[in-house]
Image 1 (spheres, rainbow, N blue to C red):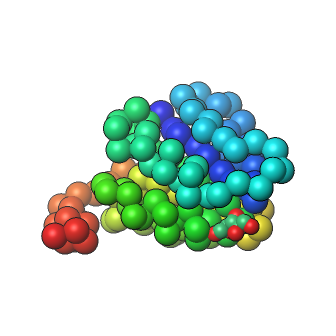
Image 2 (image 1 turned 45 degrees about the vertical axis):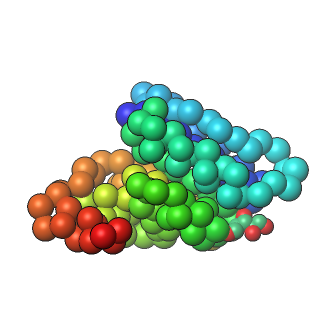
Length: 142
Ligand code: RB5
């Protein structure tokens, strides 16, 4: 799968762990930064990752900040994007199965790397079910 990934300075360590995990599992990963501890603005990275999904140069996107919240708020303002903050595997699966959330948002200050990798795997193991869920997600913007 083609995955675009980005973080702010509050998410670089978890981004690195997810990046290594995805590459080890054979995925095509596009790392859009940031790297290092210099303070940056999370919307810049959220928009960059969502842009890759919207223009179909990535199948899905992953965003990491301190809590995942700012990334998700920004991503959900990008036309065509549905993003979900997840902290449990059931929500990670349902975000894809029922909500077709192609952008996953995680909080490095909330979620340890062990659980975060399980959340990523749970979300990536699923595809959108469509059907009645397609009607519902379409109503979000109609
Ligand atoms: C940065 O300090 C922090 O606000 C950011 O990483 C994120 O948690 C915002 O939602």
